[in-house]
Length: 123
Image (cartoon, rainbow, N blue to C red; front, side, top):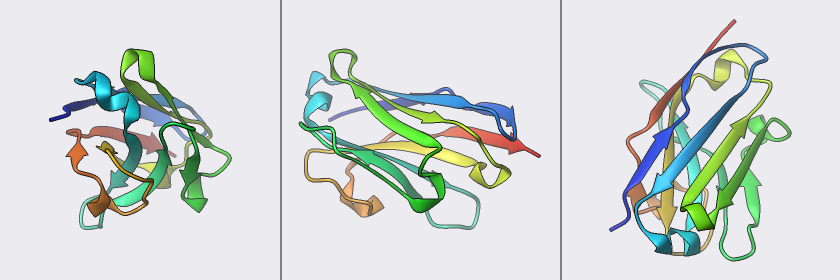
């Protein structure tokens, strides 16, 4: 059972940056596909980005391409989401997810989830 803990959320002005981290409890995390999702009240959880194992192939939703970067440090059992040029529409609870399987942009494809971290972008 992999436990995930997100950190790094907060309040930032439009145009600013935040770096989210997802720390895993298991060393095997390094062999998992990792995804970041976000959710606003009343809406479905939305795919943001994912990174594969072992080749580190990445994928992004169109609205964050060129602004967000997903990465991982397997030696530290941690994944990151660097968010630049933030917009008010990026405001959401951001969740880290992991699966011991292929990359997917579907939330149901992940079986381990963190508790989420709030990101608020003011205009």
